[in-house]
Structure formats: structure tokens, C-alpha cells
Length: 221
Image 1: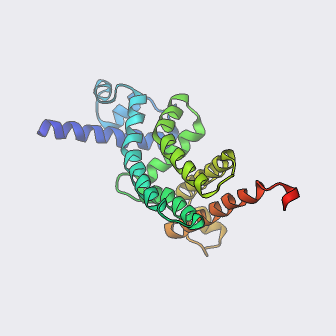
Image 2 (image 1 turned 90 degrees about the vertical axis):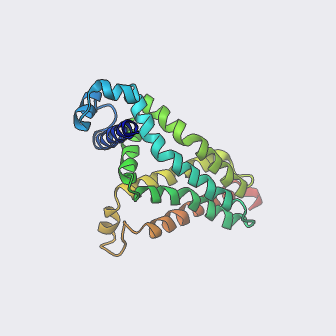
Image 3 (image 1 turned 180 degrees about the vertical axis):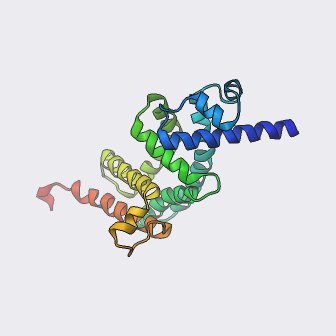
């Protein structure tokens, strides 16, 4: 049993180190040798646990996204029981955001993972993109479907665009909260997650509802 616990501890250390380095420098700029050196293990030991960098990155995503996606689906299920479509839309957006903000403050390094996600998304490595897609696309499609159900007749591509804007706002809010403090001259606190969630929900809700009027031909207005 001690051996098993030791192996688990080694894996966690490797994941922690790799996640920090990827968040700081990107996926392409960090080698297995650097990760192994900082984690205090041999490259062969790292390969034993994770095979290669792709396996390592996949494991990093899995340890964060599995609980996040599970919680999102739980909250989405609750939101879908709301009859009024506008109230339901608000609940759907909150169910998407809440687990991400909770993850950003957890003891497992959620804020660091969020920074890593932003860096890797900008970097555009094909292998990393595949892992991101495998980690999030299924859940995201469920949310897009749920949003579409609140907005009958609205083209899906409009919802996809607004969903992408929401994701960008989520990323930037989590990785650069001090900008809110600076630009508001201290009147708003970027670290106030409740306020951030409400602002993101309000803005996204308005942009999605606006799609309904955009679908109405001018001659019928």
C-alpha cells in the first residue's frame, strides 16, 4: 500500500510541476526533461506514469475537467426544470460559470489550470487542441442545446458565437482580475467572484436574447 501511495504522490508532483510550467511558458516550450528535473524524477519515471507529454497534458485536463463537467451537468439538470425560458436561460448560464469559478479557488490549483488553458488556447498546438476538445466539447454542446431550447427559432451559429464570447470573458476575468480594480479606480473588485458571475450572466443573457429580435425580418417589425 505504501508503494501505491508513493506512486500516486509522484504522479501528483509531476502533474503539479507540469501544469505550472505549461501555465508559465506554454505546451510547446516545455520539455519532458525539464518537467522531470523540477519534479525530482527520471525521464523514464515520467514516461512510466504518463508515456509522453500528450499523456501528461491529458492527465492534467482530466483531473480538473472531470469534476467540473460533472458539476456543470448537475446544475444544468436543475436549471432545465425551470419553466420560464428567461429564468431558465439565466440558470443555465450560471450553471456553466459557477463550477469554473469554484475550480479557480480550489486547493487543486484551479487558478493555475485556468491560466494554462488560456495560454494553450492561444498557443494553438494541434495535440493540445484535441485534448481541449475532448475535455470540453461534449459538455459545451449540451449547454448550447439547452440555450437553444430557451430561444426557439434562433440560429445555432449565433448561440455558438455568444458562447465563445462568454468563454473568453470567463478566461480573462479569472486570469486578470486586477484589471477590473485598476480600470474602475478601485470601485469594483475583480476578485469578487459573485459580482463577476452576475456581470457575465447579465451581459451574456442580454446578447443571447438580442438574437431573437435579429431573427425577425425587417418587414414584420
